[in-house]
Length: 102
Image: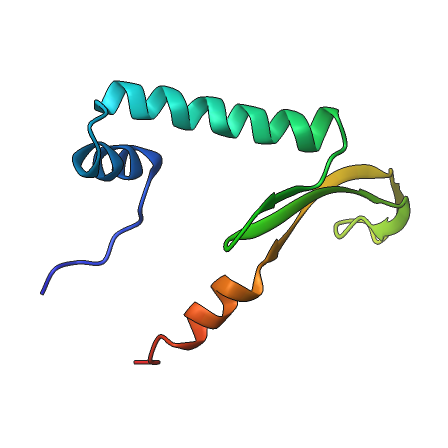
């Protein structure tokens, strides 16, 4: 039985290149530019990014909150920071529901 392994960007590049007329180098350049553009729109321009049928991404602010130092038990202020919120679209969610549980 074949071992199930993770699927990396290089695997995506290889598969897209084999199914199109583009070389692996061209596909890799396009993929890197795509992710760079998405990152810029979310992080720097604070725009929501909608990838229809896949995921929606947006920048969210996590408010400052109190945490605890586990070694000393002392309360510590955790500063506010930005994070990325990713939400699966209903299209992808429905496809996932169709996969039988093993």
